[in-house]
Image (cartoon, rainbow, N blue to C red; front, side, top):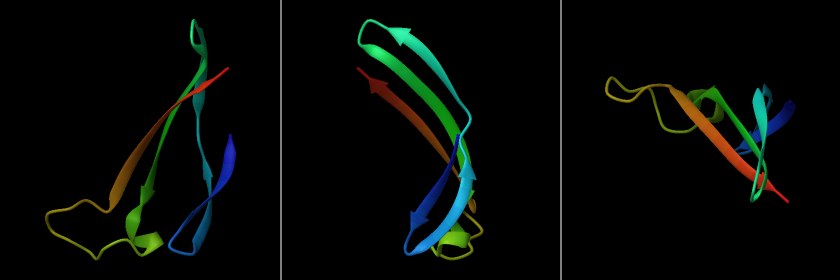
Length: 62
């Protein structure tokens, strides 16, 4: 899936690979992707904090 992600008025196209599982609660969409937080002006360069942020999504659709 491709989408636009906007953080702090910065929008970039991202790809979100995901899987779909049929569960008792509904369809579970699970995916993850990484972004460079500095591209979105989140914080500053740091020796102790990675620039890369991993985002995991789990969404139930009924």
